Amino acid sequence: MQALEDKILQEGKVLSDTVLKVDSFLNHQIDPDLMREIGEEFAKRFAHERITKILTIESSGIAPAVMAGLIMGVPVVFARKSKSLTLKNHVYAAQVYSYTKQTANEIAVSKDFLHDDDVVLLIDDFLANGQALLGLIEIVKQAGAEFVGAGIVIEKGFQKGGDKIRQQGIRIESLANIMSMKEGKVTFQREEQLN
Image 1 (tube, one colour):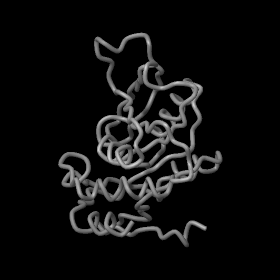
Image 2: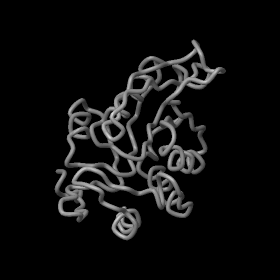
Image 3: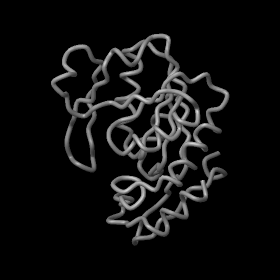
C-alpha cells in the first residue's frame, strides 16, 4: 500500500536492523486518515469472505482493526494482555512472547464475544516472529470459530514469522512488507518478489 510505505519512509524511525518506530502514526499517535485507508484496504482484500468478527490484540492493533470493522460493518474484539477484575475465568487464553519487549504475556478474550459460529479475520499492527498472530489463532481455535486469515499493517519480511505461518496454509495480507532495515534504510519487499 503506497500511502503506508510513504508514511513509513517519511516518519518511521529505524532504531536498529530489527526495530522500526512508527509511533507518530500507528503505535502512540494515530493518523486517522491513514487508518481509514488501511481499513478500506483490508476490507477490499477480504471482501469475498463472510467475516462476522475482527480480532486483534491490544493496543496498537485496535486502530486499524476498528477502521476495518467500521468499513466491513462487523464488531471488533481485542485480546487483553492483562486480566482485569471483570475478566477472570470465562476466557479463551494463549501465551504470547514479545521479542521487542522481551516478555511473555497471557492474552485473553471473553467467551462472551467469540463463538463457534463466527468467521474471524485477525488484524495486527506488526508481524515479525509471528508470536502474537499464533496466539490469536489459538484463541480462534479454542472458540471453535472459522479463521479466514490475517491482515497485517507492517510485516518485517526479513524475520521469518510470516513465512512460517504461510507454510501452514494461513492467508496473510500485509500492507507493507519490509525486506531490510540495514544501515537505517527501509527497503520494501514487492509482491512480485513474494511469488
